[in-house]
Amino acid sequence: MKDPNCIFCKIANGEIPAATVYEDDDFRVILDLGPASKGHALILPKEHAANLFELPDEIAAKALVVAKKVGKQLFDGLGCDGFNLVQNNGEAAGQTVFHFHMHLIPRYKGDTVNVGWKPGELTEETKAQVLGIFGK
Ligand code: 5GP
Ligand code: ZN
Image 1 (cartoon, rainbow, N blue to C red):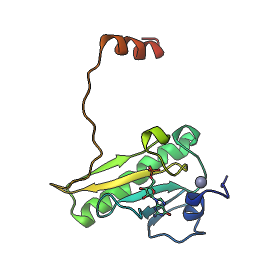
Image 2 (cartoon, helix red, strand yellow):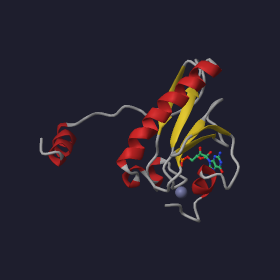
Image 3 (cartoon, helix red, strand yellow):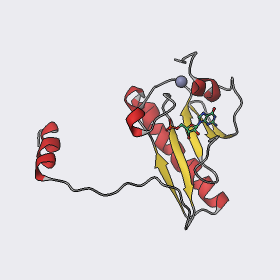
């Protein structure tokens, strides 16, 4: 299903042009217009899903294979030193476009890209609460 109001549906399906580095039946991979680093790419499924929970399992599985393939080409082609795979779900997590996508962010030694966090502390209370969700 495509969402007529969704910009990434239009880009993924070729209705709006984008710098495409990879395409197959299920995905288009484009360069991000506001890149965190040289080569920052977005993996877009062609079918609309607002987030990971809406993504069909088959497409979710394939997305990681595309990330591996395109990530390796970026890694080798750009001579980067590492890369981050980032996927935001929900406004609180930084999602701004509500069509599932994965960010492939090439990293270069000494760059100033920030995808990190300040480590907290796993308390006994939180551990028990979260394990309880899983019946552990
Ligand atoms: P989010 O914050 O939702 O995980 O990431 C959305 C990303 O999409 C941002 O990095 C932003 O720069 C990128 N973006 C938003 N609109 C467009 C667009 O029209 N074309 C391209 N190529 N990237 C876009
Ligand atoms: Zn969409």
